[in-house]
Length: 66
Image 1 (cartoon, rainbow, N blue to C red):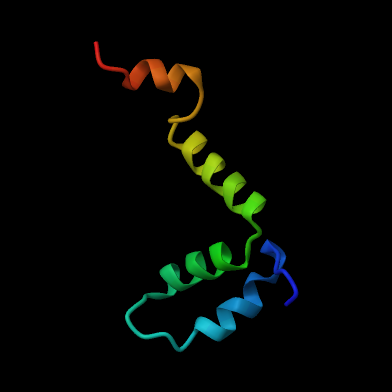
Image 2: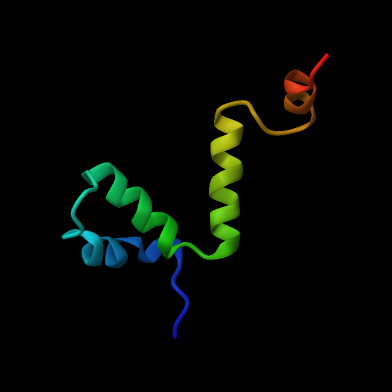
């Protein structure tokens, strides 16, 4: 089986388009995550946490109990 990449997410999305119970935004997110390699998924998670300012040493100190 050929490994997919994040650039292949439109192909995965076409397969998920008919899936009931998910709105359009959820289907796109699911397709992007399903098509990504493990390294790409990790990078997506890190980027999301950085956008929330919840990544790095300063975030650990901010959320630590006092």
